[in-house]
Length: 292
Image 1 (cartoon, rainbow, N blue to C red):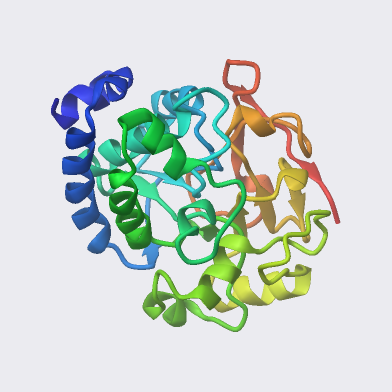
Image 2 (cartoon, helix red, strand yellow):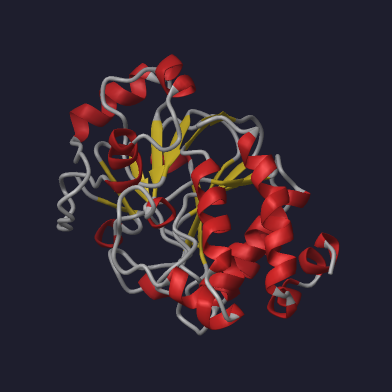
């Protein structure tokens, strides 16, 4: 089955053999290898939070927002799937899209894609691959792909990453750091704002002043992130930071919702983002709540 057949009918991903998946993993790996750790983008950008195997929502996101210049997914494509095989179908579909539209589809690394460096829990993906395809030989290939994923985006005055910031870094620093340095990963894909009630035992929590300094240093105004369920749909730190999640699994957490955020031009605060919610099964405008 070719890439166009899967992208044209996403449910065809369910028919792929292990051999077909492995072949396309090799091809998309070469695409990721050409990308830097930090991607600097221009144009209309949509940001998608953690999907965690919610294949049905991912399909709805693609249908709704494919017309933008860049569709940026913030990581955590696997594990915690709401239905059987969801994580496998979700990540394979996104990787097929990435191969066909390498500039439009941006897939950042989350902490669940960094399990080979810093273990996370739960991590059912390797077991799910084994159950779906009869062996775990695909897992090594997926790890190679995950290792090559970028970590961060800057565009339209927005800094976007899965979880946190790299304190003390400027834009030039972000351009040259590696994709799999454990210290970098702890900051970028594991951290939570200090106002969160989540405690993980890993990461580098950040407060409002630290975020403001970082955004100033990288010449951005707004941080869009995922990762932290209790902050879903909240704007924090003086309207500089928005947390979005895009899986039905989390629609009842935080301020609620299955969210996508749009930055069509330069942003100066969270209020400038256009946020939509799919928790009802239809896209609706979303009112972001505010915390200090």
